[in-house]
Image 1 (tube, rainbow, N blue to C red):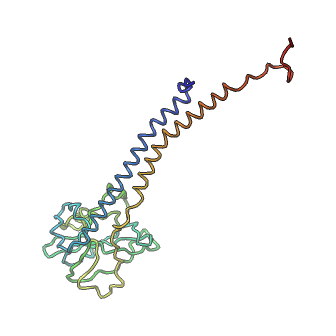
Image 2 (image 1 turned 90 degrees about the horizontal axis):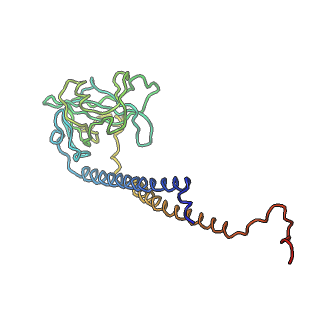
Image 3 (image 1 turned 90 degrees about the vertical axis):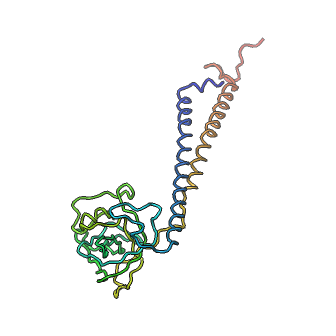
Length: 273
């Protein structure tokens, strides 16, 4: 009765099922890992934002990378803005999804080191091949407060560098690139501006400050993990159901009466006694 399992159709079906089960289990663990990463990120952001501000130089080495555990920490820096080396970062969106630019202005500290300050978001103009009109930063010495952020790269953002960009435009925020452009030793990472002291007189005309990163939602990764595992459990169940139906179909076929020979009239059971 079960010799049909050795047929080509059933061998292929069984192999596909055996391959699907570990693949679906792996996808479930992959989604679970993403869930755990999101939870860890939310915990890091919450703890960092609740920490008191410290001078950025305490957490950020010159021409080096910041500790990933220090991301989002409130930091301060004092100096004067260098508008000559100001650039904008292309293809950045605001809270409503509108496309524009982030404004990067170096802040030169008293010791001659630079700090990359992301002053916020401005909308894109009609001509994406020319520099947009950027609000002037405060003049003189200021103290800026903001979130400490890690340098961006293609590996961490998925953004690709592009050649031939209009002058004054970049694709990513990277302190090493800004150090090369300004010629100044620069603290690693960058400061995402949240406050300026003294406050600029034209505060309403300044770039739109960026909102705090989301650290409440955890996404649907855990639900997706359960979904993949349910699919994995459903594969052997489906295989068994197909097997039972095949067996039942074969048994019914064997139990059915044999068809009458061709040419035999209906009701003719052959010669009588």
